[in-house]
Image 1: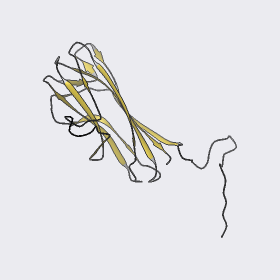
Image 2: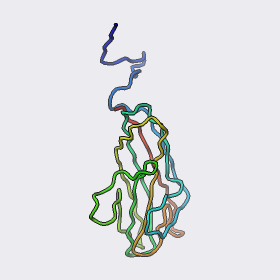
Image 3: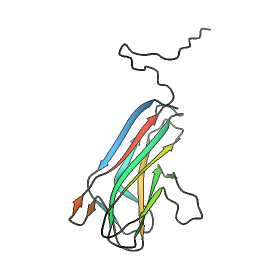
Image 4: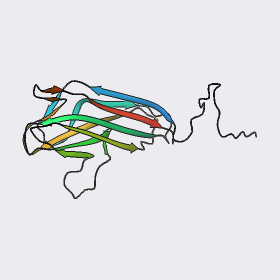
Length: 165
């Protein structure tokens, strides 16, 4: 039996042929430019804020990043967001301290909020995997994503990056 060991194999241009641990393998992004509104106290899918990726190895990690521009119509509104892989909630805070979520904000009817979050996931699969964002609002009013009445129109994104494990 033959065995070949090396630290790296590169192209003539100096780029790696064999991906090493920590290498970026692929990046996928969805940009939501239209608006979304909800008054739900329960988590609902933010329409159009999902992205699919097919990991090349079951040992790969997936960095999930999202940014949302939002506004509420109530002074006392509390907004919560969570990341969902397929139908599984990921990156949640501890239970027992209110509603579990990935991140949240207390918004104000006089200004908008920009919310960003990163979470490193280990899906342990080579099957196509969809990540999506869900939102809920409590304290009355409406959560508006990507708009504030007729004042501005924003963009929200979800990006997934496969990292070699």
